[in-house]
Picture 1 (cartoon, helix red, strand yellow):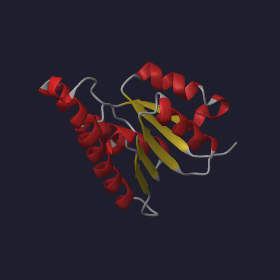
Picture 2: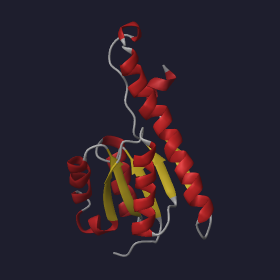
Picture 3: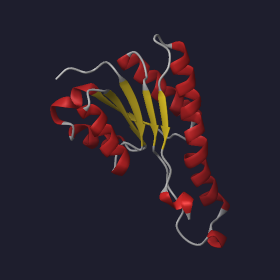
Picture 4: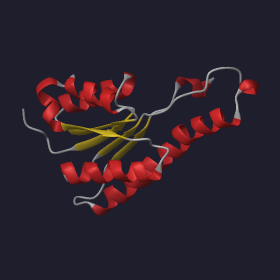
Length: 148
């Protein structure tokens, strides 16, 4: 059960679509960095990979924090040598009516869903331009709520 040498970073990898995607990448032979806010949730998700868990790392990351995002990319490169795919999946919505949202709730949504995605794209470009061979793929996942 060898790795194919390719490396993916998946944000929001502790649960839901992110976890399913991270596990699917592992099944396909990728080495995977599981990124998310909660260490124990990430570690449990990695354990679900069974014997492929040795090709995964759990990296607690608040993607709205530029330093945390830099750490995610640095730790992934240090561990696996490169980055071929970044799947920006982390995100959340504020519950309730728009007129009832506080500024802090709105800012939290924007900080994760927009700024966090931007920070991950920025670090992905830096990593993918500097590696040999150069390049990679960036996938930005959005909510179906964006269509409503």
